[in-house]
Each structure stands twice: as structure tokens, then as C-alpha cells.
Amino acid sequence: MTHEPGHLLYDPATDKVGEYRDKAGPYVILRPVGGGVEWQADPARVRPATEQERLGASVRAVNHRSRGLPSLPPPLDEASRPPWPVPGCAACLELAERREAARAAYDRSAETDANVLLRQHQRTEHRA
Image (tube, rainbow, N blue to C red; front, side, top):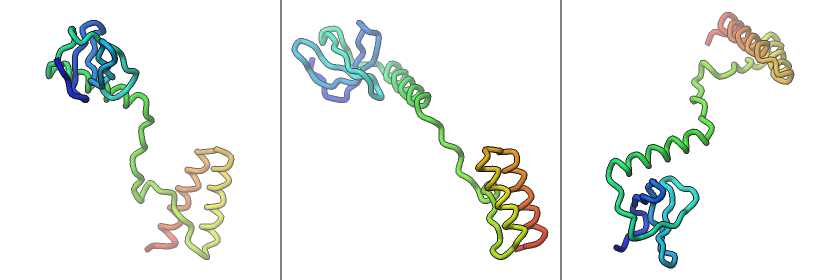
């Protein structure tokens, strides 16, 4: 039986679904769905994967990939961004400097406090 590259085949010897890559001598070369280390399989024993086997292999590949990649933080909206000091305002500048000093000292609590105070100051003194 001839196979096209990319077709998904079930290998009963390994109980895995693999993507057909090529022939190598008397064997077919299969690669795990989603990538990975290729393996050799007996072409007389492999068969086209069923829909359920293809779906299961795809889900395993997605799960494996999601465990290996760091998740991205949600995009920041305007309310969650640190406030910018208003140019020319000494109080804004002092609170921004306090925030930067806390950030440099890895004191996230003090950094957050400075952000809260800066927002409160801007709401009361610099209404837009």
C-alpha cells in the first residue's frame, strides 16, 4: 500500500498514530502528530488511522504543546497599566519616583501602593 506524506497512520506495534513521512528500506517512517522523534514501522502492519484515532492524536499533540509553552498574560487594558505622571506636577513626579524605587527593590506591594496613590492624586488634582 502506498501512502502520501502527511497521511495519518496507526502503528499497532507502538499503539500510536503517526504522520507518514517517507520509506526507508523495508520500513515506513512515521512522526508523531504535532512533531517529535520519528520512528520506523512495518508497512504491512500500519493502516490508515480512524477518525477517533486522528482526533485523539491531535488532542494529545495540542495538550503536549500547551504544557510546554508559557502562557501569555492577558493584554493590558488602560485601567491596568501603571499611571504616567502629569508633566510639571511635583506630586506626580514624587509618586512616580517612589514607584520606580519600589520596582528597583522588587517590592511589588510598595510599587502597587505608589500606583494607587498616583491614580488617586490624578483623579482629584488632574481631572481630564
